[in-house]
Every structure is written in structure tokens, then in C-alpha cells.
Amino acid sequence: RDTTWCLYSLVVRALDVKLQPRTDDFYSNREDSWFKSLFVRKVDPRKDAHSHLLTKNEESNLYKIQFHNVKPECLDAYNQLCEETLPSIHNDKYYPCELVGTWNTWYGEQDQAVHMWRYRGGYPALTEVMSKLRQNKEFMKYREERGKMLLSRRNQLLLEFSFWNEPIPRKGPNIYELRSYQLRPGTMIEWGNYWARAIGYRQHNSEAVGGFFSQIGNLYMVHHLWAYKDLEAREATRNAAWQHEGWDEVVYYTVPLIQHMDSRIMIPMKASPLQ
Image 1: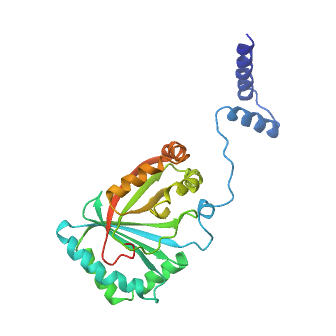
Image 2 (image 1 turned 135 degrees about the vertical axis):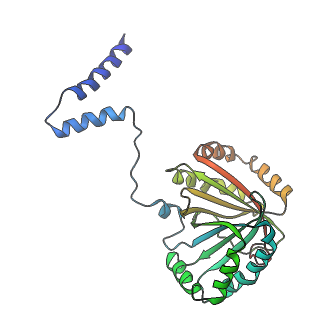
Image 3 (image 1 turned 120 degrees about the vertical axis):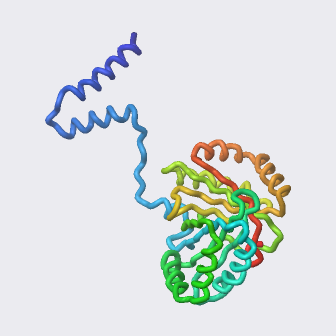
């Protein structure tokens, strides 16, 4: 009887709020908030953008990742064109940018090239590079020739997570895995909190190359870049993570944050600093 009476009282009180108008705005808002609190989860307001909470500092590097789908019959010519042009931009101090890596997809989307650039100085550096490249006749010729070889292309602008390594050149041979996660909107901070601990479980074979999240392009997108000697080493390294206490908890709590995920196994081009 006591439980039934309590439920009855709650319903009556809720109906009373709806049916009896009040002239006291403060009291009315209070009652309305009480009613909503029965059904709505409270969210703590944040005074900082997510990017400020997740990156190393306000002057974090800006990254651009490019996905080029190449006509199958043009892939060799496309690779040669990139190997002739991209290193010249990377090595020229006139441009405040660096080629992080350039790959062909081995498993995943076929006949695809992936390029990643780093702009030290953020958006101003990106703007400077784009402005200077438009005046570079060789680069504009490269773009014209490249356009004849492509089926489609897309890109994203990324920031790096504060708890990941900054990508640095590697000696090969290695294969690279790009794991991309489309998160549910509003879950980026939660993802970062879990992976700030999880990355410690994935450093034992120096497989962690870089971790990034999107700023422009597909939003709430995360990219994790890993390096392995071969597919067998990848399998062994991933299986070993389950032996560390806490890894299973990270997987358990982060999987529900994901809407879609994708994996690419990539082979470095000859000009890639990540070999």
C-alpha cells in the first residue's frame, strides 16, 4: 500500500503542476524542473571546447588526411607522380608543412591512396601552404595530372590526442593499420578518457603511431594509426593486449560509443617518411 500511495502522490503532484497555473514564475519553473528530472538525465555544462580538452595545447599541430580513390589502370602512374612531387614540398622549408606518411591500401578499399600532412602552427600554417601552392606551377601541373587519374577524393582536418605519440619517421619494412571510428555525437570526451588509460596497454611493441580526431569533414571521427612488421605480428600484438588487466574494461565501455568502424591495412609508398 505504501508503494502504491507514493506513486499515486507523484502522479497527482505532476498533474497538479500541469493543471493549476501559477503566477509565481520561480515556483512554476521549479515544479517544471522537478517533473522533467524524473525523465531527463542531467548533463554538466562545459566551458571549454572538446578540442581544447583533448589536445596537447592551444598550438597543437593540425593534420590533414586525404583519401584518393584511383582508377585501377592508373595506380602505378599515380604512385610515381606522387613520389616525384610530394617529397619536394615536404623538404622545402618555404612550406610550413610535413608529409607524415603516404600509403596504398592493401586490405580495405582497393586502389586507394592515403596521405597525411602535418601543419605546425595550425590553421594559419595551412592557409599559408595552400596560398603558396596555388602559385607553384609544378604543383598545379601535378594536380591537373592527378585529377585525370582519380575516381573520387575526400579529406579531413584533424587534431591529435594529447595522450598519443606524435608520428615520427620510422624505418621499415612495416605495414600500417588505420582504424577509423565514427562516434556517437557527444561522446568524444568519454572516448578520450578511456583511451588515455588504454594507450598504455598498446605501447609494448611500439605499435602506436598516432591518434587523431576530426575538426572538419566527418565530425566525431577518430583515427588510430598502428605499425606492425606483418599481419602475424599484428594478430599477436592485439591478442597480447587482452592479457593486461583493464583492457577488457576499456573495450567494454568504448564499443557502445561507436556508430561505425573501419580498418585499412596500408603499405607505405617509397616516398613515405613512415616506412
